[in-house]
Image 1: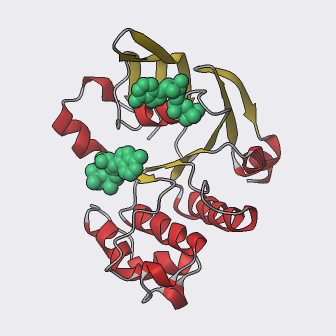
Image 2: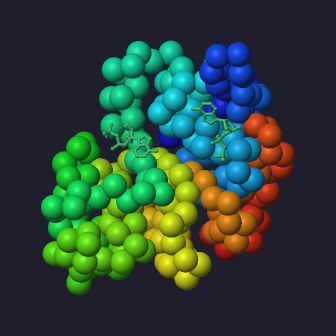
Length: 228
Ligand code: ADP
Ligand code: ADP
């Protein structure tokens, strides 16, 4: 499912204060693409991810998923759309502490229409031997890989990741991102990943550089496209 954004704006109002977080963003995300959103703090990355994914509504502009205009859906339809088509990973792992890695991933697959096998997914993220452990028995990187596995288990068409490696060191971050990269390649899941780490751009098909609520630059990763 491709996504098209046309002149999307988002203004936050609190009392007298208006913040123009998105000042007219137009973009097309192709099916199966790996998109990285880069930019300094406050440039609008999270706002962009939230409005693309229907977690928040834009102030104006259009967001189309193939033939579905997201901005026209009712609250209920939007929730259903997210549940059926989209997956989310956040900086916090949000795992249920009283469930094992496998049980957490099973919960993810239970909400999917065409779910993937939880054990297979845990093997894919390199945690086959750890699947019966509880979150507190796992490192931060392992917990985030469980979290990615849980989100992917329902087999979403698009996975949105907001600073998925924000709490992890450089080396662990790479492992988590490699997992996201592998899933993009093997499952053809479209990936939209926010980061402030420019090194991550190398994994992407395209890097969207945000600055002051606008797209400053779009960098195509030609090496990756020709290699793929
Ligand atoms: P980034 O993810 O790049 O750090 P954000 O999208 O979080 O940027 O924020 C963009 C701008 O919008 C910032 O100026 C931020 O302070 C503001 N902002 C974000 N969320 C809210 C909110 N809920 N209410 C008011 N202002 C907000
Ligand atoms: P659903 O439960 O509809 O299947 P998902 O499990 O795919 O949805 O996850 C999306 C949900 O994540 C949103 O509906 C929202 O409640 C929640 N969410 C939104 N922002 C955050 C956040 N910053 N941290 C944790 N959870 C969030």
